[in-house]
Image (cartoon, rainbow, N blue to C red; front, top):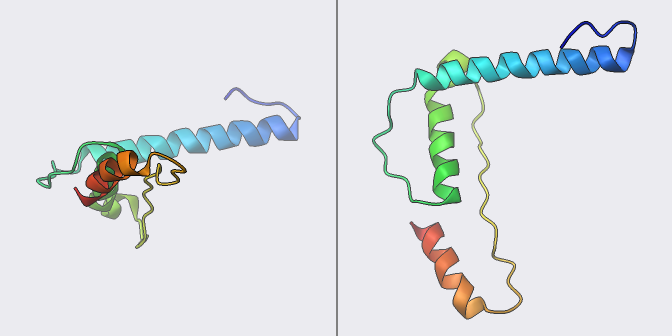
Length: 96
């Protein structure tokens, strides 16, 4: 993040890093102020993503967010074999 001199690529990179760090600080501060959620989220990656999304929605005021759509993802459904073994676990996680 030191001054990048006359190299425009280094200046752009340093500026991007500064903005990213500033944004991370603002998001972390806003999330720290969000009260604990009473909602029970399922264990696993999908539940973690849903919890993080709910916390971001809780911090929307301080972050001045106007986003109405959030994206979470759950992979693993592209099974070419062992579907009878894999899909019950995947569908159970999705159902929870």
